[in-house]
Amino acid sequence: MGLKVVSSAIISFSLLLLLASTAKAQSNGVFDVTKYGGKEDITEALNNAWKDACASTNPSKVLIPSGTYLLRQVTLAGLARLRLSSNGTFDRQGNVAWSKSTCNKDKNCEGLPMNIRFDFITNGLVRDITTRDSKNFHVNVLGCKNLTFQHFTVIAPGESINTDGIHIGQSTGIYIINSNIGTGDDCISVGDGTEELHVTGVTCGPGHGISVGSLGRYPNEKPVSGIFVKNCTISNTTNGVRIKSWPDLYGGVASNMHFEDIVMNNVQNPVVVDQEYCPWNQCSLKSPSKVKISDVSFKNIRGTSATPVVVKLCLQWWHPV
Ligand SMILES: *[C@@H]1O[C@H](CO)[C@@H](O)[C@H](O)[C@H]1NC(C)=O
Ligand SMILES: *[C@@H]1O[C@H](CO)[C@@H](O)[C@H](O)[C@H]1NC(C)=O
Ligand SMILES: *[C@@H]1O[C@H](CO)[C@@H](O)[C@H](O)[C@H]1NC(C)=O
Ligand SMILES: *[C@@H]1O[C@H](CO)[C@@H](O)[C@H](O)[C@H]1NC(C)=O
Image (cartoon, rainbow, N blue to C red):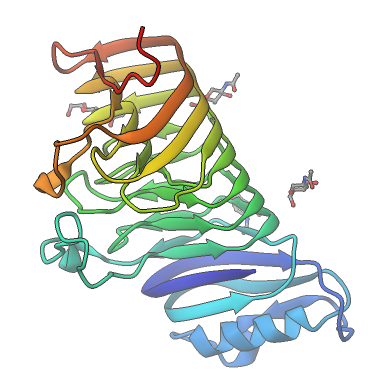
């Protein structure tokens, strides 16, 4: 598994990384980066402290004491049961990149770095972390099993480009609880292979809302199923809750998706199921979407729409009615 911080982020921190490990013994179990020569730039120190912590037989902690540091790209690989908790902020100062980004309209664009990637984490907990002004997605979750985000905060302006808050793909058992996401793109976006996603007590806005998809853009996408979005407040966003798939291209399955007890404030399109998702005219509408969407419910969704369109459905009917 790995935690990858892609930055030259300025981090204001008091960070605790706690992991259980099974190698060489260590006395008090706390690995303080400032004891590894970490001063302004803690990249090397964090790397070394992490390695020692992973080699410890006892549960161990990597500590970044309160302060403001520079962190360049670092990949932290190790064992299960990651805990990442702090009162700290990963600040990517991405505003210089947004105006130059073409990633929203050019799929071959050079990828800008995301703030934090969680790859192949099992049984992890991320708590009291803030990510600010990423150049690209704030957080990418890939191949994880049982990972919880609690009191997680995403901050970026509504006009920042492609700055999805948390993007999830190929993962099972992801919990996003009591968190606050305001950004320039989807607050939460759900990619293929996501199963058992629970989003509860999340406030979203500004941004593009909570989205499943887009699906069907690439071949061999894995099914999406078991998506539960509950007790959320979505404000000042372009969309509220949305399921989107591309027309004409590839097949896929998205089922068992439920949206319940959601308050919308000044949302342009509160409920959207769009099977003709085609931003920047990158596709053809010649043939319908091949993605099968089923078993979807929207319950107790209330509030105000910023436009006369409250529910927008643009569906392919697989079983003619
Ligand atoms: C975060 O702040 C709270 C309240 O100030 C404090 O109780 C807690 O110990 C802090 N956590 C860390 C990891 O520093
Ligand atoms: C999921 O992960 C959390 C946090 O590490 C852990 O407390 C919990 O026991 C795990 N659940 C299962 C079913 O393994
Ligand atoms: C609903 O969400 C709010 C945060 O927006 C949280 O404070 C509250 O505890 C949640 N209620 C339930 C029943 O989960
Ligand atoms: C939504 O926008 C209004 C008007 O700009 C602002 O007063 C309000 O604070 C915003 N709400 C949230 C939750 O961002």
